[in-house]
Length: 542
Ligand SMILES: [Zn+2]
Image (cartoon, protein in one colour):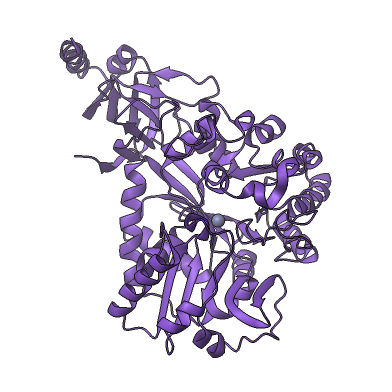
């Protein structure tokens, strides 16, 4: 029957060739979820010069257009290419080029992986990324005794999965000149019995990170291509790269110009002097698929390493509040700079104290120019009173649902029951702001969008835990989750006239999925069969 329908449609198509308007590509016999205002679902679309000419029923499109290339959608789901609205391609590159510690089940396993990596490395610096002590059933963060025994005369650094803490050996501490007396604003050097433990949190990591030599452009470019292929495999066609340096701009540009980087990149600049100068000179910057018009500001640390800044002390550490990693004067200064240059300020804000401070800053800015689109990255823990103030501040919350189902192992230990009400509260955020942008913060989480859907809609991890969902009252609908990865994400990056929905005049950027997209109580993996950017096939499962 299916074959007959296809045959019929192809015949229709052939007979219509002679009179049709010219197109480059026609997709037919599909279930195209346009994600337009009315959430229309159509069967076909005609594409020319990378843009959508028209979407509609098979008969309408086939009768009107003729094209050399046509793709039978075989009744499969098509969605606009997904956006990961908060990711770190360059951190993932480093995680893969360094010792990969993700998923280690014990400190011993971490050390074994480090030893294996060190045996092959010629560098005098041994770096690993991705450990998470909560996977070892360990509540406390580790110390460096064993690391010192294994590596007495090489500089060794191991970054925590969230990138907000690093464990280094004594050799490296000494090399970097870090002692028990060292003080760093917005950072912590963790001591025990009057001695350095080797654990450095937030800004205290800078001294170490600065000394580690970077990989070559060639190594990075090869890895970026590998990662891009994996993103396409999941139907992801855009990444909001959350924090790049000046030198990274030329790396991305080089890859775009030699046509090896096809992803849509919305890059957030770190507020370094070089980057500020770049903005003063260039203003809103666009180079083909690279768009730059935002700054990433780190206002606090992470909840896991107790760097998130809270209004009241941590429930599992009396007297400790976390801290701001950027002063509020500095945040105000950057916000004014952004306002002047029509840039977005995308502030990493985890703790309820930090979120309040950012909402204060944005409310002040909104009084001058209510249309400016600000973003709060993570918007993770908010006082319920502050959630009520979000709309007036003009902020778009940019959230990562997989964080909720990863952090659930220890979030309540840190926060207590009362504060959990405003934590990972995505439904409340949508109710207030009318939209959220959705990402994963990869490589902290995997960029798999189906894990995101499962976490956002079912509030469960890949093992379907917990059975009833984590804080199920804050679950969002399947459709809102897709919007967060398509149309709403495009608004959050000023690209809504070009990306985020499949409508006439917009880019033909979409994915055809192997299985129907849905949410169910059991996690289901899915993949793209074909991924297109601007009408060009960039990925095929075959
Ligand atoms: Zn991030």
